[in-house]
Length: 191
Length: 191
DNA sequence: AGCTAAGGCTATTAGCCGTAGCTTTATGGC
DNA sequence: GCCATAAAGCTACGGCTAATAGCCTTAGCT
Image (cartoon, rainbow over all chains, first blue to last red):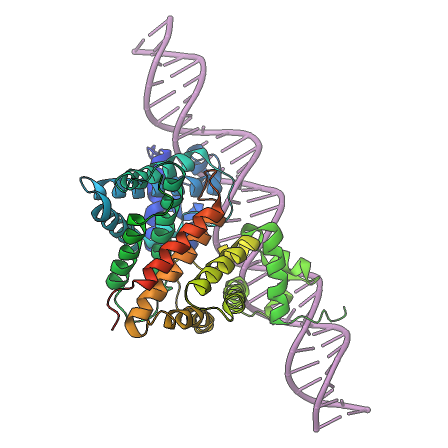
């Protein structure tokens, strides 16, 4: 029994691959172990918390991936262009990896420091864009929430099959982007 | 062994109660059966598809409940007032029953006619409001998607604990509502 | 009265998570 | 170069769950 050379990150990698091509239902320790050509209990050496921790690590990884993509997408852009690029990159990620996106926790979950930190990076990207609109302080927080709500809601409904009509999704995204940028330009309560 | 007088709807009712006070992880057939004071296999008499069908039925029920609430909330209102009432009622439902809301399918799922029908009612409520803004046809579809994205995104992030800062959520909702109503008033491409 | 259909049960199988405890590999100090 | 030790793998097992099979009882209709 030669060493497989696993690490926590490698386990998460196998889990993501499994998620991508078999969906969230198929995410079991047995299946992950099979992909890593290892017996199931061996996974506990790298992910002591078992399935629950694996899911947690997946959420952190996905959030980080998303934050990286968004950061890259808005590089060198500001205001409306940055917002458009952000929404575009956000949706693109969700469409490319729908199962990963769906693996982000949706129900009330005890706060996890690692996940919060990853989320913070995502928020920072948005906050940086908002400074271009002159938004800071509390209003920037409200605006960030608005941006996240629109991006997440659109991505979630899109990948979840919530939009069943024939109309072009790209057009919807344009309209959504327009509503958001107009809202940011005319944001109320600016000090 | 006297009859328990179960029906599919009653099984869903027990499942919702379980969901509300123990969360989505605890939703097992065994637990539902215990609540109904019935042995686990007996549930299959009412929900032949087992756990998968139960989850499907829960999604349908939750969508219907939500559609009912939204319909009632916007009764007699139009345009901006209707939009504000819709968003308010939407968020209120999600906050009152976070686990039910989280039970709505988020990952790519084969289309289910019943669920689609329930979702259609929800879309109809929004479409009716949009007629007050002079929106019809394709643009009404894009606008409906925008409304849903904002409502769902905000509700999902709120109940999922995505908003961790201290700022008042009610203010965020006001800002979000403002952005949406302004966007609808100035919707582009109106024929 | 008796038949049929439906709703309940026990028993069983298969698959999963997670723990316990053993064995092997790799590594670092002497 | 060798040995001790920690890490990483394994097998075996217990407990829980979903789901199926087959039986019994109740309710209601003819």
